Amino acid sequence: MRTISGGCVCGRVGFTVEDKFVYAGYCHCSSCRKSSGASGTAIGGIPREKFSVTKGSDYIKKFSRSKETVSCFCALCGSTLYGEKPVSGMLHVRYGALNSAPELLPQAHMHVSSKADWYEICDSLPQYSEFPPG
Image (cartoon, rainbow, N blue to C red; front, side):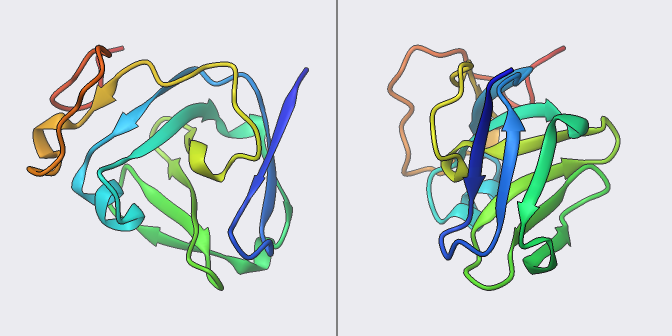
């Protein structure tokens, strides 16, 4: 089983994740845009038990964006690392926090109904107004 390491900018927080992402995509919701400072973020969905914090758990801060999403980030450098999805038991790992490429690359754009007006999606991946069905 291949695992991928990841972490924050300052190096205080580290994690590993099994390279068994169930789905992956580009999220354009306003929360992902604001937390990343970009047009959106690439995420991979994985069951919580396939993810482990390897160092710096005391540096991880959590912000409850809603009952469906808890953002987890480094308290020192502010790097957003993953989002907990309490209802589904999944995590949305920020692909930008990974140290190497996962096998499953983004499959679609999601939450395009709230994407930035100044951003144009220029690839041929499917686009979903909200989260893709299934």
